[in-house]
Amino acid sequence: MGRRPFRCYRYQKNKPYIKSRYCRGVPDSKIQIYDVGAKAAPVDLFPFVAHLVCDEKQQISSEALEACRVAINKYLTKNVGKEGYHIRVRVHPYHVIRANKMLSCAGADRLSSGMRHSYGKPIGVAARVDIGQILISVRAKDASEPHVIEAIRRGKFKFAGRQKILKSLKWGFTKYSREEYVAKRKNGELTADGNIVKVHNRRGPLEKSSLYLNGQA
Image (cartoon, rainbow, N blue to C red; front, top):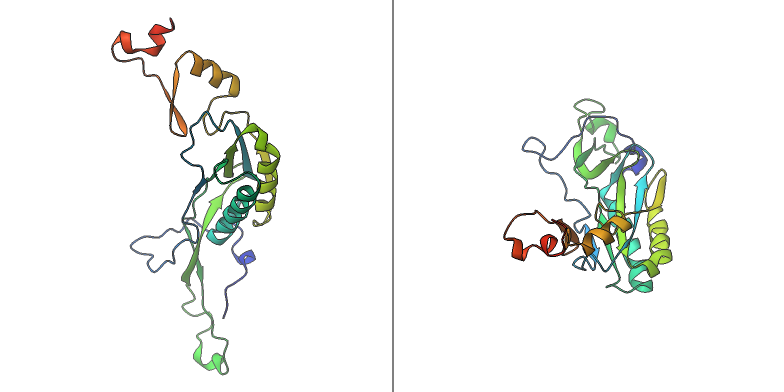
C-alpha cells in the first residue's frame, strides 16, 4: 500500500497528537531547514517583507512545507541571487499523522483484522494552522519586491486550501513600522543585532549611552 493522499488529513479533526515517550517511532519531518538565503544579513539591508498567510483552519504536511520552501528558494536564487533575500518558514510540523495499514495482497481478507485494533501507526508529521496565521515570510530589498511576490505565489501552489500574499508595513522581520524604525534607529533607541534589532535598555554609564549623547534620555 502506498501513501495516502493528504486530503485524508487536511482538516483538524482531533486533538494535537505530538511525538512523545508514548508515541514513538515517528518518522522525521521532511523539512529540516527553516531559514534559507542570507539569514545573517543585517537588519538594515532588507527593509521589504512579504508574508504568505493561511486563510483556512487546516493541517499542512511537512512534505508540502519543504516543497514550498524549495520552490521559493529556487525562484529567488535564479532571479535575485542567493545573497539577496532571506526566507523564514514560520510554522513547524509537530502533529503526528497515523494510518491503519491495510493489506492489499491476494488473500488479504483472511490475514487482515479489518477494523479490529484499528489505531494506526505514525506515518508522518503536519503543522496545524489557523486562519490568519503566517506560514512563510521573505525579506529582501525594495527593488526585489516583484520577484518576492512571484516566488511566494509559486510556493503557494504546494499547499491545499486558500492562502493570501500580504506585503508588510513593518521593516524586515522587526515589529516596527518603517517610519518608526528609521526614527528610532537615528536617535539610537534601536541598535542592529544581526537580522533583528535590540531596544536600548537605558542602563549603564551615561557617557556610553547613545540616547544620552543624542539628547534623548
